[in-house]
Image (cartoon, rainbow, N blue to C red; front, side, top):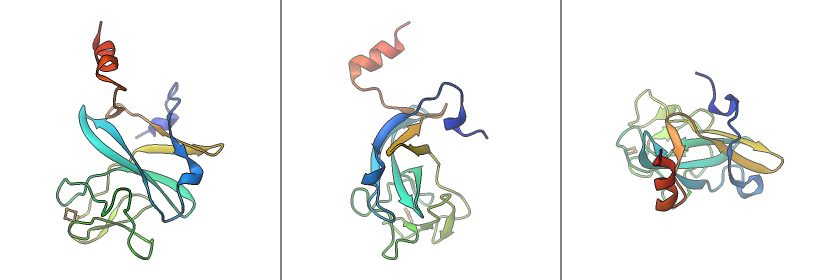
Length: 141
Ligand code: FES
């Protein structure tokens, strides 16, 4: 599947300064719509690279951070679900331990350019309209 950020005309939406994401540190969390339903997403830095996922565990569909934006284990090596300890590889969201099976977290396309982190909506993962009035405008013919 092609990456959303490579799609023509997909300019990306600004998320946060790259300097806000320390390697193995606190994630930036934001709201998205996945298939039209409200979800939270998070972007963090691991091994120098920014990675983003939908904040939803594969074991039980709940948010995983143990404090807002805190996803890493104490060694800063894995993303860990705070509920039952499922462990995910930060590079690709793959489950590597605990009750999350063989799946992967849902990836959100992100990129860092000139010190700014952007995310790239896809057909399935869209931005939340800025206000109810904006949402009404978007649905108008
Ligand atoms: S809900 Fe995440 S490990 Fe159980």
